[in-house]
Structures are given as structure tokens and as C-alpha cells.
Amino acid sequence: MNFKRKAFTAMAVASVLTLGLLGCGNDSSAPANSQALKGTITSSGSSALLPLAKDAAAEFKKKHPDVSIVLNGGGSGTGLKQVSDGTVNIGNSDVPAETKLSKEKAAELVDHKVAIVTVATVANKDVAKAVPNLTKQQLIDIFTGKVTNWKDVGGPDQNVVLVTRPTTSGTRALFSEFALDKNQEASNKSLETDDSGALIQSIANTPGAIGYVALPYLLNNSSVTAISIDGVAPTLENSYNGSYKVWGFEHMYTKGQPDALQKAYLDFIMSDEYGKKLEAQGYGVASKVKQ
Amino acid sequence: MNIESTLRADRIWRNVIRGAGLFLLIITAAIGIFLLYRGTGTFTIYGHSLSEFLFSTQWQPADTLAGGGHVGAGIYIVGSLITCALALLMATPVSIALAIYMAEITPSVGRRFWQPVIEIFVGIPSIIYGWLGLTILVPFLQKYTTADSGFSVLAASIVLAIMIFPTITSVTMNAINSVPKTYRQGAYGLGATRWEVIYKIVLPVAKHGILAGVVLGLARAFGEALAVAMVIGKMKAFPKSLLDPTVNLTSAIAADMGGTMEGSEYNMALWTMALFLFVISLLFILLIRYITSKGGNLSESK
Image 1 (tube, each protein chain N blue to C red):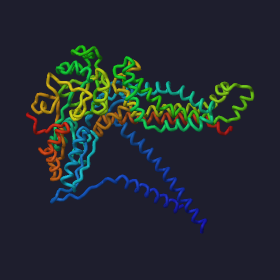
Image 2: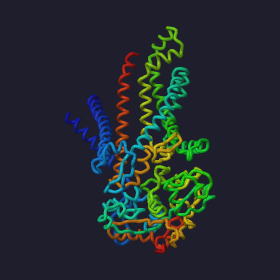
Image 3: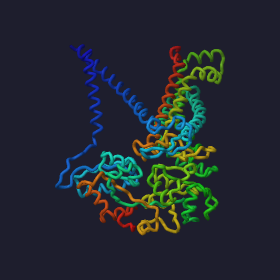
């Protein structure tokens, strides 16, 4: 009996240990070293910022092979909460920390504006041919569900199909704040898509569809047409010179001032050298904005 | 000596198996406890009532730790119920007919050819059904019906129906196959036709097994997230017709969980949805157990 119990305990312990080891497979932390850049940066947050962070991390690692950068998504809120808790070194966010965290917690974080992202209104090609431009009021009327047919804004007799993003999306937050003047979208009249790629496909396939995506998604995509607001096209140049309003900063937050390694990584992303790569991906360089 | 070591091996392996079983039990219990802990946060931390969650249609949870939003999941729950009911309505008659055909009318081809085919269907990942729905069904509905976009209750139900029909078919087929041969022989001996044998003997005897298959299909449909999310349109409104889009529980969880902040009201409300799904699927499982235990004496009478 005693032996049986012991053997059982041993088995249980062994199985738990095995599982534990499996779980720790990708933990590759190295001790920080002050001479050469060495060590680990952990980062989580905005999924919109993730592709950029991944690319920047890969480029950074080419220069500093001893640095390892662990990147995770999870959304802006998660990134902010984790950097505030000290779970990660850098929290990526589409929105300012104050919108998600309490005032005291947000004050502990240091904001690094690494890029800007411009949000473009896009529509199905058939409609966009007839309506290449909308005034801001028309745009608000369409997204709040007041205008339900394209003929009311000078287009063909075709029902408006709203295609939007979830309320937790950073793109939606930007669009609603700057394009719709904080009016809320009519969520009971809009189709919702999880990610911008699927949104573009829905709009391309659905006559009368209108929605919005971040500029990087439009870079190599001609299946939908971008629509100007008040005659201003959604481009990086127009965002830089201030004529196009629907854009926002992409933030990387650290708790307190970043250490040497984190600072090197953040400086690299904001450098002129990497700035060219940023623009090639459709993001904007934060320092080029005239404010 | 030899016997001694054999006995020891026996003991060791018995404990290995016992450990594996216990481990599984612990995991299941842990999931339940975790869901209960997270899912009740909406009520205990943010002070919403259960009736608000179940019956209100105002869904505006705040993605902050302060809370103060609304967590009415009525539209989501109705969306799940409607799509599942419709899917069941479409899949059940076809599945039962197919099972009868395979088991009774062409038993040899059925067992050697149709059964493996159906089992392959069961194993197809749901994303493939969703993808087919998105690229074929949705554009088709958009083009040939009055639907604005094609994303609709109908599209979601059809995709679900196609997904659950193999489950219902194979369970029904097993139920029919387990009806003792002597019953059929007896009926034929009394001069019954094949239709009479199927209708009056086989189906009534296999009734419990068939019902269990239907409930199993329903459980799969209720918990399915990916395929439905791709074609339902996720519009937060009650559908007025089959061609209107709506939203359901699983697609809301799948779409928004990643974007919410850990521990926020929005996050907790989604966990509550998950808990609700968990409770529903537990109920389904209890229902299956109840149904099959009623028909359980079948194998003994063989």
C-alpha cells in the first residue's frame, strides 16, 4: 500500500515536471551586460503595431546578435496593463495610456511615439468610382446610420453596407475620434470583422460596402478604393502636413525611463535609417509630423 | 522472481493509468473552476445582475477597470440559439435519412465506403467550412438573393448544418446498427415490408441513440466559433429575416477577447459568455447521458 502510494506520487510529480519543462522551452533569458548590448527585451500589446515591432526587432537583432526580443500581441490594453505591472519591459499601444489605465498608473509610464498610423476610409470599387470624395458630415451620416443609400451622397441607388472593426480595435478608436468627431458608429447596422485583411476582402466582395483600414494594409492592395475626406486623400504626406486628420501615434511605453538596452531598441526604431523602412511598410515617421 | 516483477510492472502501470486519468480530471475541473472564477467577475466585481446579462440587449462594456458599462448579451444569445436551431432543422432529417440508407438499404457499401467518408467529414477542421462559406456561400447569397452583403443567419446556419450533419449521421448509424438482428428477422418473418421494419421497428428501438446524436450535433453547433464568425456578419442587432446578419456568443468571444484588457469589465463580460457556453455544454452532456441511459438496456437484450 505504502509502495503503491509512493509510486503514484512519483509518477504524478514526474508528469507535472515534464509538463512544466515543456512549457519553459522558449525561455531564453541571458544576463544583462553593460559593455556590449546583450540581454532580453520583453514586449506585448497592440496587434496593429506587432508587425512593425517584429520587423524592427529582426533588424535590430542583425546589428546586435546577442540581444533577444520577445514579442507578444494581446491588444493595447493588455500591453499597457502588463508594462504597468512590470510583466513586460515595453507595452505597445495604439491609444494613450490614460484611456485604459488609472491616472496614477499612467503617470508612471514613459511614452515613446515610435510611428504614426494613418487610417483610410475605403469603399467597394463600384461605389468609389461614383463617390471618390465625401465631406466629413456625409461620412458621419453614413457611419452613424443616417444615410443608408449611396444615392443620398451622389452615388448610385445602392444600399450602404457598413463594415467595421470591434469596439476594442485601435483603428476603430482612431477613426471614431478623428473622422467621425467622436460620434459612435451604428453598431446595430454594421458588419464587424476581426482583422483588417478580412475587412478589405468583405468590402471588395460586397457592392455598396464602406469601411476603414490602416494605411499599411492598402499598400499592395488595389481591391478596394480609398476615399478622400473633404477633398484630402489619406496619404502619409497629407498626414505629415496636417491636412489629413485621421491618424494617430503608435506608442511604446516603458515603466520609468528605459534602461540602456531598451533605449537602444527604441532609438533604433525612431532613427532616420529605420524610418525609411517604416514608410516602406506604410507607417509614418513620428518626427515628420508638423504640430 | 519472474512473477514478482510482472506483478510490480502491473502495479506500476496501473498507477500510470490512474495518474493519467486523475490528471485529466484535474484539468477539466481546473477549467471549470477558472471559468467560474473569471465568469462571475461581471456580477461580483462590476455588480451587474444575471438578468441584465441574459435578457438585456445593451452591450457596451467598458474596457477599463472602473467598469460602468452595459453587459446585456441578449442579442448574442438569441443569435446562437437561432443559428443552432436552424442548423439542426436542416441537418437532422438529412442525417437520419442518410443513416437509414447507409445502415439498412446498402449495409455492405455503407459500412465499407460511406462510413469512412462520413468520418472524414467529422475530422475536417472548422476553418475550412468557414472559408468555403465565406468564399462560396456568402457571395452566392449576395448575388442571388435580396441580401445586401450575404453575411447572414442563413449562411451561418447552412455552414453549421454541413458541419454537424456528419456527427449526427455517424451516431445515428451506430444506433441503427446496434438494433439486434433478431428484431428485424422477427418483423420480416411476420410479413413486414422493409419500410415497415425501418419505420416501426428499427427507428423506435434506436430512438435514444438518434436523439443522443442530435444533441451531440447541437452541442457542436453551439460551441462552434470560427466557421460561424466568418459568415454571420457580426452585426449587433436582432435579425429581421434569414438574410439579415446577426452575431452570436462564440464569435464575440473570438473577436474581442484579444483586444480587451485583462481584468477589465469588457474582458470579464466575455468570460461570462464563456462560462455561459460551458454551462450550456454541460447541460447538453447531462442530457445525452440521461437519454442514452434510458435506452441503455438495448445491448443487454441482444
